Every structure is written in C-alpha cells, then in structure tokens.
Amino acid sequence: MLVLFQNAIIYNPFLPPNARSMTISEFSRQCGGVEWKEDRIKSLDGTEIALCISEISCGDERGSSSKGPKTPVYILYFQGNASSLPPRLPDLSGILRQLKAETKGQVHYTMICLSYRGYWTSHDRPSEKGIDLDSEAALRWVSKLHHEKHKETQVAPVTILWGQSIGCGFATNLAAKTQDAGNLPINALVLETPFTNTRAMLTALYPQKWLPYRYLWPFLRNHLDSWANLELIAAKGQKPGVYIVEGGKDELVPSDHGDILYRRCQDVQLHAEWHTVRGALHNDVMVRRHGKHIIAQSIASAVSRAQELSADQAQCLPGLAKSKT
Image (cartoon, rainbow, N blue to C red):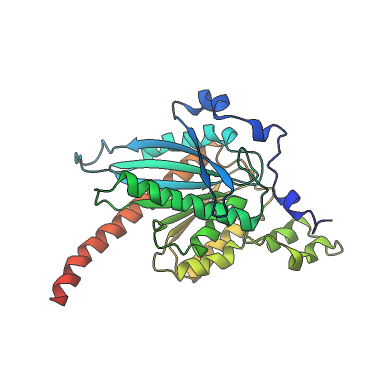
C-alpha cells in the first residue's frame, strides 16, 4: 500500500481540506503592504500551473548615493509538501520586507512562488517527474520575463532558488538538471529545513528495523536526492552558493541532515553557509522572527556574493581581450 499510494502520502495538497480553494485576497491584509498577484503558465507537458508573484525594490540609503540601474534579483520559491501558497504569503511578505533592511545597494527583487501541479489552482496530480517539469517551466518563464523587462540593461541578474523541506529537493533537482542555455544562470540555493534524500527520510520516519517500510526504497518513484544533486551542481560552470537553514527542534528531519549537506558542499567545493534557527520546528523556521532574519540575510548575502563575482568577471574580460590582440 505504501508503494502504491506513495504520491498520496508524500504530497498533501488537500491539507487543510480547503487548501485548494484559498485565495490571495484572504491573506492580503496580513502581508503588510506587500502585494501579490496570481499568474498562470504552461508546464513543459502542457499542464496549467499557477504562480504567485510579488516585487519589491531596495535602495541602500546608508551606502553610496549612486542612482544607477538596480540589480534584478529573481527568487524562485518551492513550497513544502502540504497546503497551498496563499497561507504562506504573509511570512514570505515578512521576508521581503526584511530584505529592505538587509540588502546593500540598488536591488529590485521579484519573488515567484511555484504552485506545483495538483496544488492550489494548478491542474493534474503531483509527482516528482511532473513537478520537475513545472520547475523547469517556471525558470524559463522567469528567464523570459527578465529578457523582456531588461532588454537594455547591462546589469547581470541574480537568480536564487529557495526551497522549503521537500521543495529543497525540487530546487536542487532544477539546479542539477536544467540544460536550457536560454535560462538565467542560478546564483544561489537557499535550502530551508532540507533533508539529504528520500531514502534517508524513509529510514528516519521508520527507524525500527523490524518494520518493512524502510526497506521499500528500491520501489520509490520519488527520490529527491539533494546530496547527489550537489555534486552535479558543482560540476557545472556556474557554481551557486548554498545557504542551509535548519530548525533547531525539527521534529521530522534528523538533526544531522543539515550538517551532512554542508559537508557535502565543502567536499564538492561549493560555497556554503549553515544556519540553525533555535527552537524552530520543521514548518516553524519562516514563521519565527529570527528565522525570517536568517533567510533574508542569506538571500542578501547571496546577492552580494553574486554581484562581487560578476564585477570580478567584468574586470577580467578586458584583460582577456587585450591578451588576444
């Protein structure tokens, strides 16, 4: 039964029962002035899926008085396995507001939250294979949006994939497997309460050796292996930074998974940071004030790092051109 109905067990778009009928307007008053809108796109197989989108601009009043073009930053958000996007919007809005305090320089943030197939108002049923198609479609949509809005700008964009829980698996899947040269390069991964892979979680949820469930991993159709994905990501030309944020009292993911992923990043030579939100449960990190601060700080750090790397590359290009003449 566990094998046959694994998708129904792993993906819970109907928790709570009214999750798929919730609307953005129901939560707009809790968003502190941050405005959200829904858009609809087609996944790679034609399935209609929904996005929640918000934008916010940040200017560094403490720093230089430069009024040059703002750096466009795109945050593609992958939710956890239950409920839908609208009830998450107040906390996501809190992080966007926090970014105003954390961000240095002129930056324009666009957050795009992906509603997986079968969730909220998206069509079809959820599965790893299908959601991977949705993720790729969302990244292509973001890339198209950037090229349409910033045709003339010379400022390099920054793309950040932010996943929570099971969403970390989809974020690392996308970073590891995307092959479309037209997509924006991925500059950073923010992994909130991540686990290493589905097999390890099966063992964690069913630790008793006499239970058969932990031995069913060969029959899984959902692998979500961030540990393996990190090596594939590191092998690419664009090496994103990885920012791991775990809950100090996570009741689902074992406490060593964050450490394992952090060490994995070090082994494959990916820049990584590892933070713990004290007292936070699995779904509690983004809700807590300290958690919002750490996530916003991680995003702002990722943006600063990407800007510095872009500036270094720009300085190297004239030297390379001169050496060829």
